[in-house]
Structures are given as structure tokens and as C-alpha cells.
Length: 480
Image (cartoon, rainbow, N blue to C red; front, top):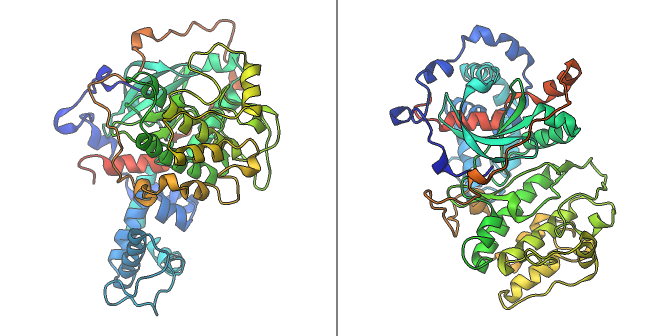
């Protein structure tokens, strides 16, 4: 969600950092006796409880710190992560030797056995249950402060909002219930929500909360205040970027696609306006309305996407898996460097059928803005036959990352969010359309909501999303 932070002034600043005066009450943990049902019903999965969930990971590590042999295991795993290797160094602290720990997975398997069982009997796990109880409390519009409208989504307005308990800023995408029903958009809306919920990536917009009001379904998402790539390509001087900047964004998009594809999700709508910048200048993929999860071992069909960016196999309604996304990356790299898309000139008035013909039959033309390596990666990504396309030879994103154009990108550091972007947005600048020019939605007439809609709302309104919520709490000032 793109915003101009100059347009919204968070309340309750000062020492509270935007929090409500009652933030301590809002984050008050329940008595452990209130968590007994949760203790009986929570899924006892090591990966979820001790790896993926931030508070669970922290508390499990604190428990391990109380036992020297477990503390050494954690130190070993951290050393492996830091080095980027999957085999041990000769020793970690003089006590861990190659004879004790040969492979990283062995250590993890050990921790997920008896140590994990004993952790579940400890006060650290009880504290985790208290946080989970708090996480699962109902979410309503009163959970947030709401600020002015910032833009439009497909079914309603987008506004900035701030969590009262933590001061964290988000973008709230409102889906008007009557508008969704009139357009028969329930399946599309629920699909986007479920995919957003499933993906946990630094390179994809994140869903933190899903709740409802009387008139709307609300998705609370990562706030992105640096504008979109379309604005930066075409409205910041000469069209296009220098190659170094384009390749940095391409590398981050590649990481985002890799995270989506790991969950068997094909995005299908890569284009500049769907790539957003945050306040540091890092990008995230947004708007997952056309994304779909592919069943294990299957392919899909579907002529969906945006004219000029759809792959040949999509246009021809052939079966595919994730190949359209690598085509889309090729289109994006071309447009970022050239300042126009490969098969349609800027503001060119041309029929859809002609653009589709160009995609199927014509070869893109390269100007002197492209280095030989930039031409090469675009040609490989824009191969008409998906079997010949980079990223589709069996190794996915690894193939793309190993292209010579990325030789100066340290992907491990990039994924750890410690590389500096080539461009940092000015916090005083406006990188989007003036909010005064945003068209207002007309009133939906002739549509009535009734009890038959409740089943859809129940599936949609699931409250806090675990990983983002726990990250938010851990990042809040003065947390316990």
C-alpha cells in the first residue's frame, strides 16, 4: 500500500511513540490459568513454535540458555547461519567439535526431540501461551487509530492506521461488503487474504490483521511510503533507472518470487505499479489478487494478468506453473532500464490483440542503455518458450541469481536486509498521485447483505496473523 507519510500525522507521540495511554493494559498478559485450553489444543510443532514464530523462538532460546548443552547447540546454529554454511566449522567455542556435530540438521533434529518436550513443561512455554492468548484476542476497528484516505483498492479505499497498543503504522485496505457482493468478488478476496496470510517474506507485502466493520472487510498490511516503481520510472526525471539500481530491485524481486514459489504460489501480475518502495528504499511485491497456489505436482491454466506483461503461454491459455513470473521479471528489468515496456511504448494507443501478437511473435529491441549482461538476462527471461526460459530449467530462482549480472549482489546479506538500497526516498517528498485527485467510490445500490454472507465473513475475519503480530510486539518500545 503506497502512502505519503506527510499526509497522516500519528497521534499520541512523545515518549509513548504513538501508543495509546492504555497500552500497558492492552498488552497485559492473562493469568496462566486462562491459557489451559490453549495448552491442550495448540499444535505442538517444533518448526512453528520454535523457529517461525518470533516470540516462541525467543522464549525457546531463553530456555536453552538455562542449560549449557542446549546453549551450545544454539550457538552452533547461529554460527552456521552467520557463516552461510550447512556444515560445522572445526569448533565453535572450543567445546563443540566436528565429532559432536557434523551437520546442521542433526542439531535441529536433536533440539526438536527431548529438549522441545522439556521446554513445553517449563515456565518459558507457559509465558509463550500467555502471549498466544493475547495474540488471539478479537481485532476490531478500535484496535487502531485511523487516518485519512490515501488511495483506492479494487473494492474500496486505503487509509493509514496505527495500532494503539504498539504505535506501529500500517495501511488498511477496505473491501466494501456490498461492492464485493455486487461484483461477485468473494472468492478473489478470500484467495488474496489466504495467500497473504501464508507468505512470510521481506520482499512481499505482509498481512498483519484481518477484521470487519459493519460495512467493510479490512486487510491491515505493510505500509509502503516510498511510492511504486511506475512512479519512479516515469516521474522522476528521465524515464528509467541506471543499470545498478535496476539490478538491485530485480534481485529483491527475485527473492520475493522465490519466497512465493517456495509455497507453490504463482504471482501472475508483475508490473511496475505492483512493486512498492518502503521508507528505506527496499521493495516489496504487492497486490496478490491474481496470485494462486498450485496443487502439488499439478499445472494450471488461466489467461490473467496485465496486457503487455502476460507471458506467451498465458496468452495462449496453455498450462503452466511459475514460468509467467520469470517472464514478468524480464519485462520489469527491461522497463526499468529502457524506460518503456518491451512490447508497448509509453502511452501508445494500440489494441490488446496487437500487443498480444507482439508478445507471441516479436523480439524485443535493445538500445545502448543496456549492457551486454543486461541484454542477456532479459533475453533469457523473455524466451518465448518457457522450457528455454531462465528460472524454468529445474532450479528456479537459483538459476536467476547465478546470472553474471548479479555478481556484485550478496544475496544472503540482501535477504537479511542489511544491504543499502541505491535510492533512499525523501521523507518530505510525495511519491504518489495527489490524494485530492483520487476518485471517490460511488454508492453501491441494489445490493443487500443477509445472513447467507456470514459464512464468507467468518472465513475472512481471522484477527491477528501470528508472525507479523509477534514481530510487532517484539519491536515495540519498552516491551516486556
